Amino acid sequence: MKNTKLFSLKQVNVRSINTHANHCNAFIRKLINRILLLAFTLVGIGTFSQMGINTPTPETTLDIRGTNHLGAVTAKDGILVPRVNDLTVNGTVNGQLVYLIADAGSFSKGFYYWNGSIWSSMGGDKTDDA
Image 1 (cartoon, rainbow, N blue to C red):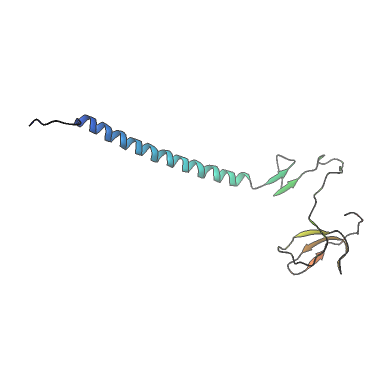
Image 2: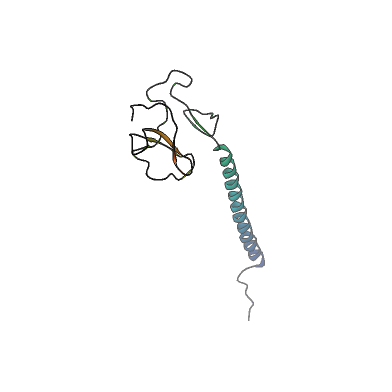
């Protein structure tokens, strides 16, 4: 009987080398992708430490600038805190701020903050705005 070879030794070696190289390339690509993802995540954490509204360069943790920064106030400038009609429910976080829109029970209309056990008035003059 004649001895026949289905593949030559040269072909088998080339195929095994190519298969090994493909596995190595796939591993290296995954490793590079993971390193890049980690790098972008770490860079992102540092760049989002401050938030600015109407400013590209915030100076504090939250920097809100009016339409005419350092100029005359406009009708749309300011912040609007949550408005409520009673303070019968306890707050959840110390420093939580709300605006009571009308007198309710023993509370007079105005700004209140949660101090951990009760709603405390921020004082100041009463206004007729709601």
